[in-house]
Each structure stands twice: as C-alpha cells, then as structure tokens.
Amino acid sequence: MNLNLAGKRALVTGSSSGLGEATVRLLAAEGAAVVVHGRDEQRTQAVAEAIRANGGKADIAIGDLTGDDGADAVASAALAGGPVDILVNNAGAYRHLSWADATPDTWRDTYEGNVISGVRMIQRLVPFMRERGWGRVITIGGGLAVQPMHQHPQYNATLAARHNLAVSLARELRGTGVTSNVVAPGAILVEAVKDLLTEIAPARGWGESWEQIEQDATNELVPNDIERLGRPEEIATAVAFLASPLSGYISGATLRVDGGHIRGVA
Ligand SMILES: NC(=O)c1ccc[n+]([C@@H]2O[C@H](COP(=O)([O-])OP(=O)(O)OC[C@H]3O[C@@H](n4cnc5c(N)ncnc54)[C@H](OP(=O)(O)O)[C@@H]3O)[C@@H](O)[C@H]2O)c1
Image (cartoon, rainbow, N blue to C red):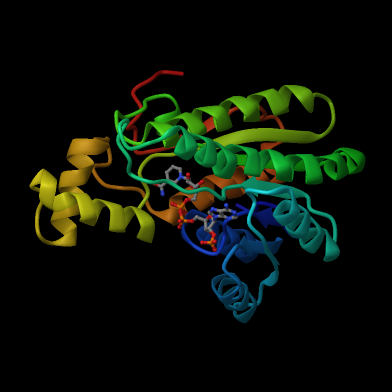
C-alpha cells in the first residue's frame, strides 16, 4: 500500500534512538522528509545520516524539551527546512522506581519531560497545520496509561495524561483538517527496555540468557497473545499509517500495538 507520504514533512521528537528512530526511518523510507530530534547531537546526526545514505530526506533538531528555550530551538530548527505537516510526540523517559522511591520532585520532573514536553511542541507547530488545513499529531502513549503496574507510578501517570490530552486536542481541532491520535505500545524491545529487564532479572529469578529473560519478562509483566515483546518497527508502522492521508477519518483514537496485552473490547 502506498501511504502517500511523499511531499509531507514530519518531526518525530526523541528520534535519536528507540521507537522514534524506527519511526523516522520508516517515514523517510515511505517518502516523507523527516526531522530527527534528540538532545544528543551525535546520536541524532547519525540517524539522519543513515537516512540520507538510504536516499531519504532528513534534517535534525537538537534540544531538551523540558524547557521553553529547548522547545523554541527545536521548533525553529524544524521549521527552518519547511512546514511541519506531521508531529509525532514521542520523546520521553522512564525510570524503574517504586512508590517509596518516586519523590514528589521525581513526579514533577517526569510530568515535565513526558507531558509538558509534548504540549510545548503542539503549541509551537499545530497553529501552522491549522492555517494550512492539514496536519497529523500522533502521541505515543502506552498500555500503562489504562492498566498501570504498581512500579514506576510517576511514569504510568504521564502516559495517562498523554492519552487524555491527545483526545482533548482532537476535539479542539474539529473541522480543521488536523487530526490527533494515540499509538499505545505495549512493552517494546529498545535498548533502554533491554537494560531495565536485564537489571531486574536476577532479583526475579529470570533466566540467564537474554532470550530466556525476554520470555520470562513477557510472561510475568506483559503476558500477551503473541507471546513476546514488541519491536520498534511495529510501532513505527502504526505511526506511519496514522500520519498518512489514508487515516483522514480517524481522530481521537487510540491504536494499541501490544500483542493483545490490554484486555479490553474498546
Ligand atoms: N519502549 C517501550 O516499551 C515503550 C512503551 C510505551 C511507551 N513508550 C514511550 O515511547 C517513547 C520513546 O521511548 P523509547 O523506548 O524509544 O526510549 P529511548 O530509546 O530512551 O528514546 C527516548 C528518546 O527521547 C529523547 N528524550 C528523552 N527525554 C528528552 C527530553 N527531555 N527532551 C528531548 N528529548 C528527550 C531521547 O533523546 P536523547 O537520548 O538523544 O537525548 C531519545 O531520543 C517514550 O516517550 C516512552 O515513554 C515506550
């Protein structure tokens, strides 16, 4: 299927690694011009160069989204190369903390980094999409938004806020040609997740090899019908569909990509 992304320009925040990296790679392969973003310039540049080496179009934008100055820098770098038609709010971080260890300051910082970061980009870029009468905002949420674990409560709550604000934005954008949707991953195998699972494996009595740890972690933490963790490319595919003109009648929706981990009919 041709997603008709040629001629569109997409900013994917947090695309210097993980889900964001897989997403910019796929959007570029589908013909979109992409803006790769991260705080780490070297990593960000490396992703952009790899895309260009494959014949894709990629600019970069560097900045920490926990503050207005960083967000200004990212928005102006992104807009310098042309209008942004597609915003994927993906940047964020998670720490494996218990209720006892997650202090109020940690809660505040996590909200700033995972929620307000995205709001900053919406406020800077969506007005231009509105003026142009076409746009896509895709928020990366997660199953923990609706089915939180007892661990990392400060992180779970930020995913719930992301789901909520994305629907509010869809209602705000009524009749504008701009849509807002959520892609909700389950547990996806990126380096940060692999490190985290490897770190907690000994205390939980999970296997020695990575293959066994993945199997044990899947069964214990995220049991699902496909019986494995997801892969970044599987999230990128869902984002690319929602970013495309083909998704024009979808707004305020959540597309779960979690192997069926979340047990709901809605
Ligand atoms: N992996 C999963 O299982 C999973 C499941 C559900 C949801 N998610 C969500 O998916 C998103 C991507 O996660 P990932 O697993 O791909 O992690 P990752 O590999 O650690 O990637 C995180 C990205 O976000 C950027 N970033 C983090 N904090 C930032 C900040 N304050 N300002 C600007 N950029 C920032 C990082 O940039 P630099 O490192 O270059 O600075 C990096 O590019 C996160 O929002 C996460 O909550 C992940």
